[in-house]
Length: 208
Ligand code: ATP
Image 1 (cartoon, rainbow, N blue to C red):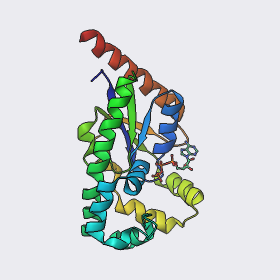
Image 2 (cartoon, rainbow, N blue to C red; image 1 turned 90 degrees about the horizontal axis):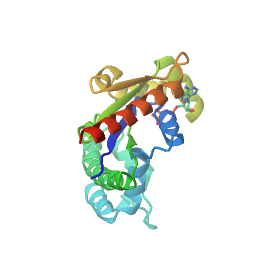
Image 3 (cartoon, rainbow, N blue to C red; image 1 turned 180 degrees about the vertical axis):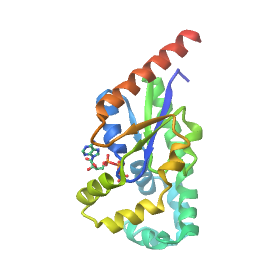
Image 4 (cartoon, rainbow, N blue to C red; image 1 turned 120 degrees about the vertical axis):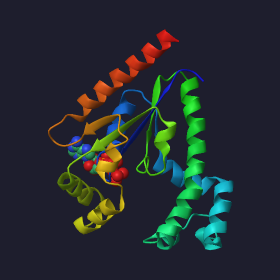
């Protein structure tokens, strides 16, 4: 495979992962959104669909063969063993899909690419990546942004934050931290990392 850096971007709900990734995209860097891709694969990948039907029953897809998200959500909501089964089925499919995607990006000559995933650490996805960026943002700002973006109550956001890994645990795996509060310019921080990744790829190429 051509020299290519695999970067991961993760962070808590509403920390700004997608916003950070959109800046990388503006710089011409390909971005793989693991959560969106998982949803797509659950709808399109026959092998994955078969496994989901076996685990959760035929009704997990409607008569028109569309994933019944509400039905699935009801099964896994507040049920860690069922959620674990769902993740054990979906995560390997996304891993495989990402591996194919990243190879394509490398062969297209991109020096690096970015994988965005909410559960990057939980899914042990960091093991397949070269560098991890953790996006952090004070809880108050996240609460304000998410209640506004999703039209949900603060208590609901807090519940979701409580169900996720803490920033403290996430940061144990961080190679870089992007601070997305009002005091730090996101664009400036992403640009600095962009330069660093290009430099790193340039260096390893000249050593090889
Ligand atoms: P989720 O975990 O829900 O997928 P996320 O971590 O991807 O969220 P974003 O969607 O990037 O977070 O950001 C959450 C919201 O906050 C969005 O509406 C986004 O436009 C806004 N936002 C993010 N960063 C900033 C910023 N620096 N200034 C103003 N608004 C911001």
